[in-house]
Image 1 (cartoon, rainbow, N blue to C red):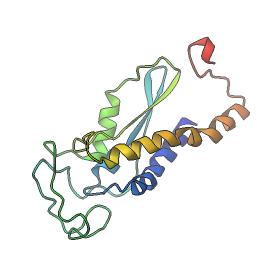
Image 2 (tube, helix red, strand yellow; image 1 turned 30 degrees about the vertical axis):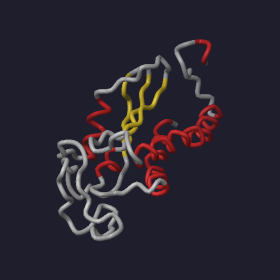
Image 3 (cartoon, one colour; image 1 turned 60 degrees about the horizontal axis):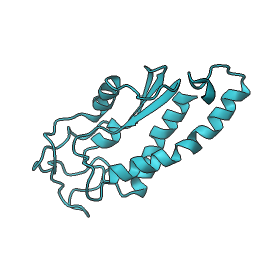
Image 4 (cartoon, rainbow, N blue to C red; image 1 turned 180 degrees about the horizontal axis):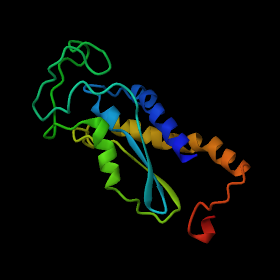
Length: 170
């Protein structure tokens, strides 16, 4: 159930990113998007976005994108011009960054099952018109709908595991 919802969440990332005008420069933000699934505080599954590898590692502050096309295939001379890194030391690789970071994280709640969702690239600061932030907020709002059919399906199968260690939440 949780794995299916996490996979759907990763698959939905691109739709929400496009809706919030997120640019895919190197592809590292998109490919670092990771969902960790926890049971009783222990990591039991990792789900990430699955697509082509990024075009290169993340850009460092002041570094211009050197290739002719961005990750999403748009030419560099298009609407945003040649992108120049605005923050960070660069050198991050999205496909391994998300899973490596989620392995070091632990949920703070004591609920039986939990999901942590991250997009840990360094050049995604919480300021200005940050499209990564807007995309993640939209995905957060979509989570109840993504889980709705799956939770009903699990209950229909008489799956007897409790949802929380705390009796009042089961």
